[in-house]
Length: 103
Image (cartoon, rainbow, N blue to C red):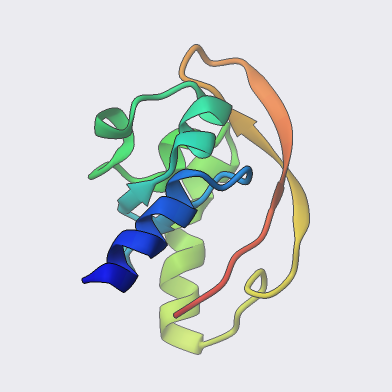
């Protein structure tokens, strides 16, 4: 239990935005830094598809990327950082660096 509390404290206080999703792209958790970055409250994002944080065309393609990864095992982005464009709640765009890992 103590380790879980410590891990939550580390994630909640991390400078970097951290978001976890399930294998269908549904947001399971989002830390305060990611909420600030995208200008959403946690309850507005958790349970939603991660694509709500993406502008087009990435929004339309994201589920297909996940499906292809599950079918083929080809990880085109896992372990590779890259620059992307995110979309805030108000619809404005901003650049950010994405790093993806898998448990």
